[in-house]
Length: 352
Image (cartoon, rainbow, N blue to C red):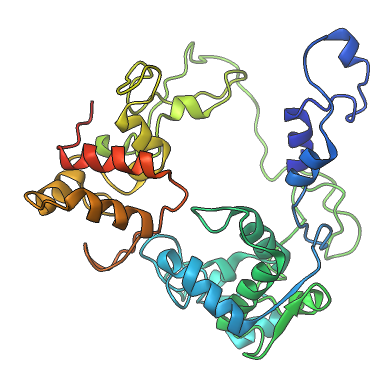
């Protein structure tokens, strides 16, 4: 099911899905989405470029935007491995010519970068438009997305330094993607797709064969995690991030739901830190990607302006204070929430 269809269901568009009678069968459940609501969600760009907005952007402008919005996590040249997997690297001019990245086959490059794997340039445009920057997704205008993508493509030598990427020439760029021929439809999960050998797919033939035994089945499923104890709640309470229906359940992690401080009904500071993503990089007692909060409190201890200085660093981000790993800016977090977090850290953050 496509992401757009899932959105329609989430919005209660049972009528749009061909089940108008459902409104009568289940009164009070669901409603028709407004055109504005559908437009806000229906922004995906498909491999055939359906949904691609009009616009353009050049490499130089992309470099400026990259250094402002992207370099803190991905490095100035898109090759940083400090926060996320590198985007650029591992592709050659020969790969651009053949459309198949040799490094994926012979293992000659130490790590698989984004441009080594992704076959369609539309995927890059779509992801940047919907999910970036990390702290402020969907905030870039189409022209900005074209410019940032042009800069990335130039770093990989797919387009020249004076290139202006636009909705009119992006299809030409697709013909130079290093791994454009790295996708196959000849497997059981893609029946009905055109085959490179002629014909349609492989007829839906499974990749593997087996016989379901249906015996000695477990009566209950135990949810386990390979993460170390200190990182269990790095991304908040996993149990709260799963739908309350269906078979999927998340392991309860993080602070209990009943923990509150401040005004009645407000989340505890630890819950706030999990909600804002702070615990993904910082542990209370130990550092993860960034320093542990006990280390931060120790460094600022005794400084009269510690709260003001630390709040400013949280808001603006930075690099070099605790090593080379950058901290992205957090302008999306309200000043009041930052003040609560900073006070909690300086007073000796507690895990409970």
